[in-house]
Length: 188
Figure: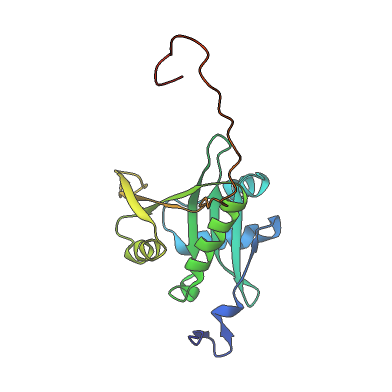
């Protein structure tokens, strides 16, 4: 078993706690957003709205009581797709598994909500995030040109998160013989 990476001597990434965000996290979410992003930030008002929409999930990661990351998952009612709309990890917690744990938690939330595929967009110059998504089995399927506020491009990734495994117990299908002199063709 690999040894956990330590932070400040005694705190390890195994101490990272994931949970659903609450309105009490609003200030910390805004602080983290401002720390992690220079542009394309989620506003306080938008965070509040995401907290109030029961279909969407806002998962936070805390380490020693400090909010160090979040993953925002949108789940449109009209599809079985889920989308990681935004994910952020504090610079103090980067490179030690917090992002992966947040993505896995986002996938689990989506599976529990009956979603089949997880999608996301990532800046084409964000090599660390692209490496994470590659490692987790995401595949690139497209590009959005001029996607970000600074006109940067976004790569589109997706991964199937819900898999069907047949049980082997298939219901018996009755046989109905043809009773007419003609057939409607292959659709009949």
